[in-house]
Image (cartoon, rainbow, N blue to C red):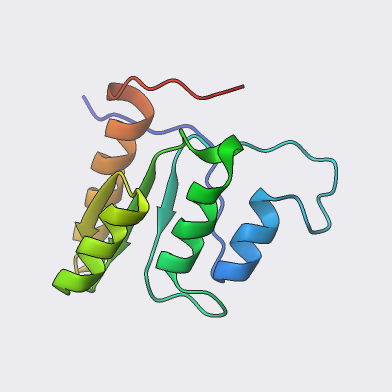
Length: 121
């Protein structure tokens, strides 16, 4: 039986825009949105994924939201820095698109269905 993730997914391709969105500094003023999990690539325009991660972890409202880095970078320094900044998981992004989709489904299923974590209200 295939597990289907039914949660709403939002794709934001810019680090600064991602922070604006979760900090409600855009057209969605007043819209309360607390993601269940945040997937980050390291190579984002405006702010890279590590900078976004650092900002997320500095915000007490988001300290319990799982953050997963999915990236093509396997630099030891990137992995070490990500964990120092509080990432929950660091995953190598498969080059093949179908493998990428399968990986995201597996990781999404884990963080959204299998893993039990408590978010602060």
